[in-house]
Length: 457
Ligand code: NAP
Image 1 (cartoon, rainbow, N blue to C red):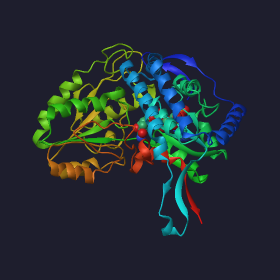
Image 2: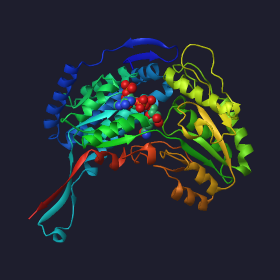
Image 3: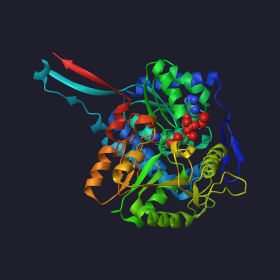
Image 4: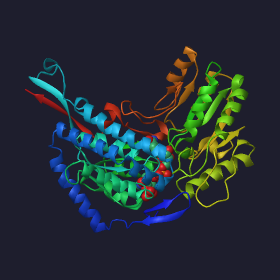
């Protein structure tokens, strides 16, 4: 994939970049290793200060960075600005709490026959992050803020279609005052990722992206016995039971499925509705979806812009066509407009069966699928009938059903009567083919640390 900014509104290539040569990559790795040797000795107070400065830079440069993200991958300016603000919040969150999360954990010395004993969290060294384009700043920050606070040095290999946002990340940390090379962006294609993961100077890796990329990096990390965190795809269920506030559920369902132009790993993708309210929910949901404004993501008032890439748009179109050919009913949308750029309309499909490809695949675009079930137990069974396990949504005001969903949904998160999202203060990650390891909260900052046992006689 060429490293380039392509405007998804038109398909025009705006700017291209040369990938690092092997020699230049070698030099970057050497610089990262040198930085790691001294950065690990900086104090939590210093790192917190730099993170707060990074948050201030983000606040100051919000408009510029938001416009860049919109240009590179098509999300609305409003969503992009909110993403920048969320990144600033994450920087401040780890500045405020990082030292507490990583404080020494004493144990009773008498229990282990010592005069002192404790667990200490120490940085691993250089960590590679391979990141996707869909939340180009947030995904990278979710890695960078805790990793830097823990004393690790970061290397970012970003998706090839967001090179300018990737370069901004490096500039951001430099402008915030972090030591030289504490964070570097590597403009490389995915073909060089294996080489970086295998390099002895790199201690660990994390990837947010598709299952295929997760398998590739997981295999390489396994072969080189390195820690890896994987944040992969999802096909989140959204359960609607008769006691739910249906109007609110339909509104949130619409936002959840169509946020980020339908390209979110934790977007609700499969809507599983109790038969008693199926007709009413379908009508409400269809009305909300049909009201979404599709248009130029740079303009105020737009809800949905184009998809980020041509291949992504083609994949979505193929999944819808396959479903319709096999009997799915198009309630809203379903036809791509004949215009330049990577547009696909918000779409609602009903009568979806397990013969259709989208029943099992992740649909990475604004396409919702409706399923009707006879009971809460049947809803759980269908919700779990997927290889993914990222987030899940459950809408019910019945306490027994809430308990059932919290207990039995196979997912890294369950949100009851609200939209699945990420917060710096809550752990984020998946089970099954959605990956392993956690980002955010205390869990995320500890992923790339050596939990060192200290025993003093
Ligand atoms: P992708 O194609 O897997 O790309 C993600 C990153 O991996 C890019 O930097 C890409 O580089 C690189 N990559 C691709 N193939 C690779 C390989 N074989 N070896 C090493 N690196 C490789 O995914 P995407 O299309 O950008 O993102 C969409 C996917 O990410 C969806 O499945 C979505 O659900 C998932 N996602 C998950 C989370 C989460 O937190 N769980 C969050 C956001 C997105 P190039 O761009 O150079 O190919």
